[in-house]
Length: 521
Image (cartoon, rainbow, N blue to C red; front, side, top):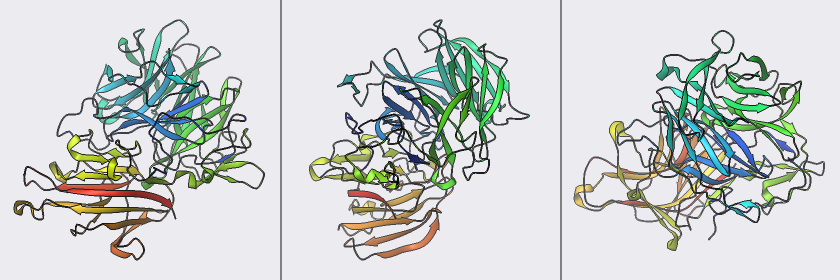
């Protein structure tokens, strides 16, 4: 059986036949919660990463040949978040607002941990095969470049004279001050501080909640691109100066205007091999998280002009025609002889026929433990073992995926086999879960030792209903409809739980998952 979903974990060979730069598309290009996205280009391949907070694998990396069709190919943090210790409060912490760059044949990612400081994780030398990057990459251990409580949202710049700069913001909850941006010089290897950070911009009066820095150099100007005004209501700012420490002059380059795209900001600028510019950013849509949009970008008088004269575009005519993919469902004819992304591009189905979990699955508890799961490839199934709930009933072994920002159905075929020892009767529960910051909604599997089907139907307002079935055809509603809620800095997530109370025993029950599928309704 084959895994039939978009995001692949393999040494990837792209199937796009490129006939130009960027195809016609409709925003959002990614209807999933990739918060605080950043993007860079390596040759003719684009790489994107985003905030992963407490989820592991962390720093998922997506790749594209055209900035529109993306596949997950890697994760820079695989098993345990740097600084994590048993019992840590993890929700919403750890990996914030990364920047991804290529430098000297490596991929570099800098990110902020609001409680520990700024980290750098970099790949070993990039491997090429048939002119393509071969994924997954080999990653070095993360380095704490700048130990400091409250330093976040970093971005590096390797200058022409060999100096290395790092811009960043601050988290008011830890730093005791917000809405300011800072600059530091790093050592030549980019892995330690050479000069301390100092404030170069104060946005309190006109641009509160300035954060999310991205640092560039073009035509002799240093540019700091950053959001302001808050996650759900803000705008994108660009500053420029001939001196890295300023003073900087400033323009608002993207705002909602008359469109329906609230808070279009926080992202990265990238150019195609042909020199065409684009700005990737998120839109906060609440329960479904921060989904990804792509705006055309051109330069006028050494200032970027984003979208449609500073307002987000819904559609872009594109510069690439006759897009060819082996997944014909991923494109549709727009009536003008060109192709544009379709929401069908984002269906997912996992048959669990690999010895490793696919990288669109993430554990919620800051680490991965081998006692939590077994990828039973021989039987094409996933087995999740029960793990004890921690303080405040926290379940660290939740196995989750992002939910799409459209009406969808999630379905799975499962079987629950709790531990039958008399001491453990009633101790274990397992099933499907929709998680959020203030509430989680669970559908428990009946204790029958038989295969059953679980289904979640969720509308485009993220109102959900659970169903069960014994044959996958006739469904029975399970409980009342519910309103999903967002997580801590992230959207709601859907997946599986297999847990037990504080009773101890030398063995555990398990949940078998035969397959899992997300489809648009």
